[in-house]
Image 1 (tube, rainbow, N blue to C red):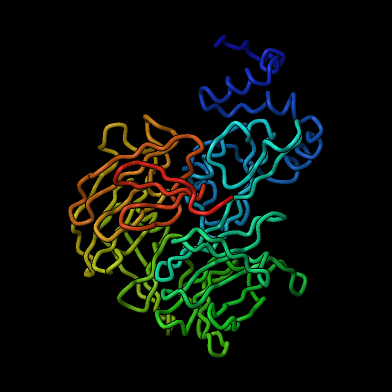
Image 2 (image 1 turned 45 degrees about the horizontal axis):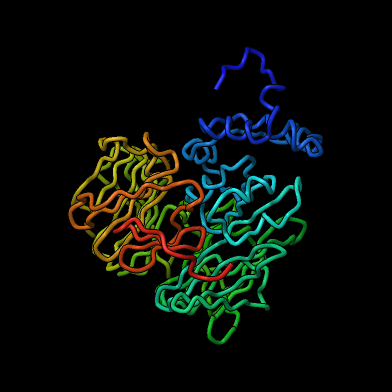
Length: 433
């Protein structure tokens, strides 16, 4: 590749669309000017108006995106660019985050493993916007809620044994936000304007009887977790601390003492409480009683704030991924069982904490957004009892990043396919496009 002179030389970059795309993608750069200059001229006025109206921060790496997000709970993310879609698959966005990719049909047609879209049917040079599926899994019922995808796929339930997809016409454009431990209650939301303010219309639905247990438009909702018996729901809301509702009322029982994001926590399998990272405080977690709303603050022997926290399926262990890329296993008394420093691995990861932890009966999956050797990401499978590395799986463009655990060591990817972390093999899509 020839070096460009100082000041640009746009003509050289734009000489060939294919060549310019290869030049941009070859080194994973951030220069999308060739694509805009030749193929998106009709959108330039809108883009420049948008630039004047909002603050933009360009990035193509996971940690800068999440660092820029800070304490702000992002609802929608628009990804612009030629063929860089698997970055969205790889990042661990909170439940309910809407992800869009804007690109030309030509580039989307080149990439394998998309989430059911068929860009090859679109005439050039039409701009194509793809919406990525939301997934909420009900493990006891062996089913998955996906969607909705505007103007294409409604909210649906997937039978994970047969692959059968059952659309829900009554709640076709509602988004799944959370499911109870036994799979009998489902939280759904849709955007609305209530009393002149942007809100979420939230319903908690009894899956079997279709009875609505809670219906409110008082909040802009970011997350919902349920008590063990399904009597209460803790709701993460915009501009305020989480609210606890009793579902046989409905009546708001309490408001949490601290503000926290559900995305960084997990429900305790053995007690009726939700444990979550105190995001900006070193080695600190909050434990909220899901019936009374009482909160306990726990200080841990860690040198860094916690990025993610997960319980083992049997509740005997707690795993944390620190913002220093150290994964720690605790017992229920918060005594350290083992630690694994991922910065000490050859070609170690550039950010374990934003990408998440995957818990299995005897294994722990650690998802790294990128490594020195592979910017598409890597998954590490550890022995949950000792922290020893069992297998390392390299990701690739278009494969899709892990979304939810499935079985003893497998995960469902954003693409709907299944990755076996024990073998590294990627299976077919679980349900039809």
